[in-house]
Length: 367
Image (cartoon, rainbow, N blue to C red; front, side):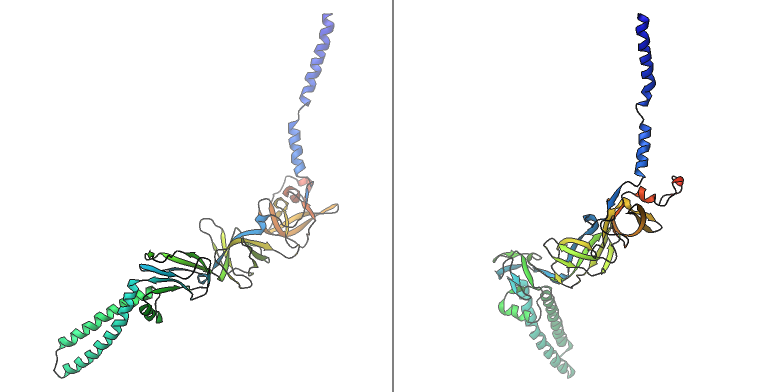
C-alpha cells in the first residue's frame, strides 16, 4: 500500500517539474514590443495648429521717447500751485506745476542786469581808448574797465547756463522775471499718470513731480528661439486687447546676451502710434489651412529635407514637408501634399521604414 501511494506523488512532481519553465517568457515579450513599435500601426490626423508654443511669441511695445515725459527740476524749489490731477489728458504745452525757484530767479535777474551793464562798460572803454590815444588817461584806466567787462560776462554765462539747465530759454526768461515763478508744462500729449506735487512742498533737485504717458511711433520687440517661419504673417495681440499686424520683415535683430535667444524689432504694418510698454503675444498666422501641425516623431529628416508618411487608402506614400517651427512633441509644417484630415504615421520608426528592404533591416544608418 505504501508503494502504490508514493508512485503517483513522484509522477505528479516530475510532471510539474517538467512544465514549470514554460510559465514565464519575458525575453519573448520584450522583443515583441520592439517589433510592434517598428510596424506601421499608429496613425494620426493632420490638424489645425493648436500648440501655443508653436504659434505664440513673447512680445512688448517699445515706443519712441516722445511718447512719454517725466518732469523734474534741477534746483531746490517750492511748489506754488498744481494745475492738473492724475488721469487728466493734457496737450503739448499745457501747464502742470508752478514752482518758485530762487536760483533760477537770481540767474534771470543777473542775465537781464548784466546785459545793460556790459553795454555801458563797452561804451566807456571806447571813450577811454580814445582819451588814451590823446595821452589824457593811462592804460590802467582802460584795463580796469576791461576787467569789469570780463567779470560781468562770466556772471552772464553762469546765469545763462543755469537757465538752460532748467529749460528756460527765450521769452521764458523775461516771463520768469515778470512772474517770479517757473511753470512746468507738458512736453508731450497724453495722460498724467503720476503726480507728486503739493502746494507748499519743498522739492529737492532731481525729484520727479509728474509723469505724462502718451503715444508715439513704436516698435514691437519679439523674443524667440531659432528662426521665425518665412512667408507667414505676424499679429500682435496686447494684454489690453490691442490687435494689429506687423510688417513683413524686422527692422533689426540681435542675440540676447547670456540667454542666446533672438530679439527682433518690427513696426506695425499700418504705422500706428502706440503707448510704451504694452505687453502681449505675437501669433504666427498663415493662409487658410496653410499651416498644419503633426507630431515631431512623424518627421523624417534626410539631406536637409523633411518627410512624413501619408496613408493613402491601402498605400503609404512619403510626402515632403517644410518644417516651420518645432517645440516639445509638436511640429508646425507646411506642405502642398498634405491637407487637414490626412493621416500620417505617428512615430519616426514607421517613417524610416518606408521604402526599406525588410531583409536589410538593422543594416545601414539612420538619419
